[in-house]
Amino acid sequence: MPQSMQPGDAKAAEIKAISIGKTFGAFHALKDLSLDIKRGEFLTLLGPSGSGKTTFLMILAGFLAPTSGKLVMDGKDITNIPAEDRSYGMVFQGYALFPHLTVEQNIAFPLKVRRQSAADIKRRVGEMVERVGLVGHEKKLPAKLSGGQQQRVALARALAFEPSVLLLDEPFSALDKNLREMMQEEAKRLHQETGTTFVFVTHDQSEALALSSRVAIFNHGELLQAGKPQEVYERPANRFVAEFLGEINLLPLDTVQLDGERAAGRFEDQTITVNKSSALAGRAALAAIRPEHMVISVEHRKDNCNAITCRVEGATYFGASTKYHLRTRTGTSLAVSMPTATTSPIEPNTNVWVSWPEHQGFLLPNGS
Ligand SMILES: Nc1ncnc2c1ncn2[C@@H]1O[C@H](COP(=O)(O)OP(=O)(O)OP(=O)(O)O)[C@@H](O)[C@H]1O
Ligand SMILES: [Mg+2]
Image (tube, rainbow, N blue to C red; front, top):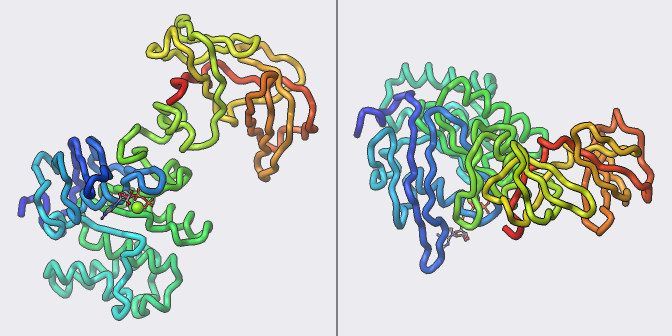
């Protein structure tokens, strides 16, 4: 076993996945997927059901062999190293606790397997119980714990032996909203405290944006984009990523012209100015703007803003914000989200201006 895989080695690992392919019969579950997992980062794999997230995690864990490509951990090829020798921590949705073992026996289990001394195990279990807030519950069996408490035990058990990588597959998806948010905070804190490399799978975009240092977006077995939450949300590489991460308004522009730091095209009878994207110069494209970057006004605002006329069709009240549903003159539908506190309600059928700063708009290829 190489030095970096010794039990109890707390060093966070980096993993390079290089051109990973995985087929099940004729079906391509992963297609030529390359991704660098950085040392100590909190990387989230995000994508719709069936996009290959669990398959990729299973390949990282060593439970599935890739059909093609390789995995390099800390400079060493680990593609053919079995799961037990990779020694990663794991928390899976269906990865149940041992029902006949108490909380402390569950957490001690991976330490016993690694033949640590009784004194070390006792100390480490005590630390982990405290770290996940389960002091007083040590002697309970899993069946006597709430769902959130059980997931805390699973986290403690996975982190007890200080793995160099922790793999988590939708660990909180069965919990209700409040408990899920609590466990998200817990996971974030444990990541900061341990410095371990976390690879977390979810299909919940807000969970991905809230937790991660980077998000990798999967679709149909392909990696579409990887970047910091702000990057993928504010500068998505394509329409799928833009729409998967949240609502987005898309205005079809005719031929895009480059103009200094900006690009511009015509939408209805207005010129719309957006951030430059050289790849789309001279072509028809979509101007993309998030609903929260737009505002509604009765007067035409001209301060470095784009503005189009719309008719209000309705509104949805979300408490902190209100979302207005609008339609442009030629029938493109738009959504504008504004803080409820600073906005007076706007009646349906009102004609208004919708405006937004030029730098908040960006170009996406039309038809992707
Ligand atoms: N053992 C297998 N045999 C055949 N097909 C499989 C197998 N495992 C996964 N697949 C297929 O590979 C694709 C990717 O599956 P995977 O479980 O990786 O998706 P996922 O992104 O984790 O989805 P979810 O969000 O639903 O968990 C799916 O179409 C699935 O049916
Ligand atoms: Mg899955």
